[in-house]
Image (cartoon, rainbow, N blue to C red; front, side):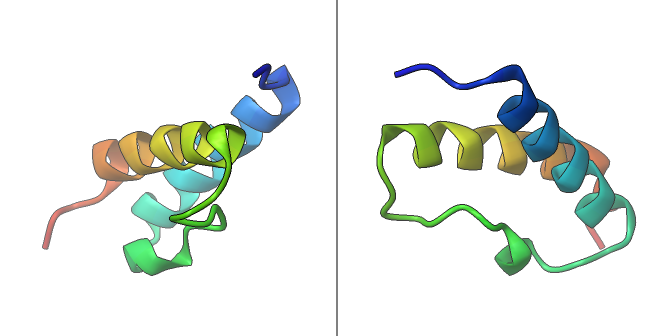
Length: 56
């Protein structure tokens, strides 16, 4: 499984934007029951989202 730099950058960027804008975690574009690639991107998205959300 290889994740392109473009895909990684997109997951991090949109996770950060969602967290900073206070969007719900359910806006994550990667499916819960996806393939290995989708799960890896979802994890990246979630970590970035959690880092940039206020937690309120």
